[in-house]
Amino acid sequence: MALSPTAAQRRVIAAADPATGRLKGTDAQLAALVKRGLAFRHPRPPHDHFLTPAGHRIREAGGESDVVSPGSATPPEPPAAPDAGGVFAARVGGEEAAPGDTGPARLREVRGAWQGLLELRRMTHPDGSTDRPCAWERSHLVRAAALALEAAGHRPAGADGGDGYRVRATPQPEAVAVYEPDGTALRGCAATLERAGWHVGEHTEPRTRARYLLASPRKV
Image 1 (cartoon, rainbow, N blue to C red):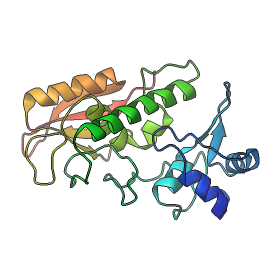
Image 2 (image 1 turned 90 degrees about the vertical axis):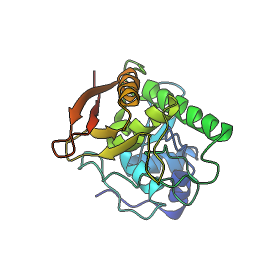
Image 3 (image 1 turned 180 degrees about the vertical axis):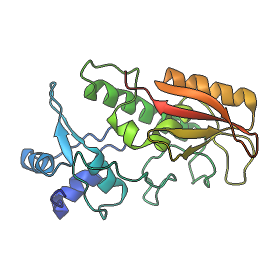
């Protein structure tokens, strides 16, 4: 178990960029977060600091979760809906749309988050590539897949049901299920995820015969 951060360090974690996990703070604060396994220093200039998956877990839980040390089991999938604090989260489908969750402002926010995620890929992959998911995406599968879909213009299902995508966790490791009642739209979701660096296969529910996608982040 990693050391718990101090109140000052929790404030630094809370202020991290929600998409990339990039941190701002004093050298001492950042070094202390690295020591606790909550941040890492990027090896390339300008040597920015970013949250580890354990650090992201604390930020998303509002600073109340236990710290998971690097190398331990992947933390549980966080709640899918945006939290009450207004931190950005891609819509996974089926949640109530919060005020401001539609229109040009939301579109700009989603596009900004996607660009931030591409930058995180570039900064954390040794070869600087942006064509495959990074470690943050593999530890936040539902949100990562939903962001790829929403950023490409796909429409999430509303709380009252109807057409639109729904991204859900599955018992399978590193895999999410994507549901979309419209067959053409489902195939469009598959193409989007493949372009975003995911392996995608189409399957049929044995009981309902509904078609769905099973998507996993590509590693190479």
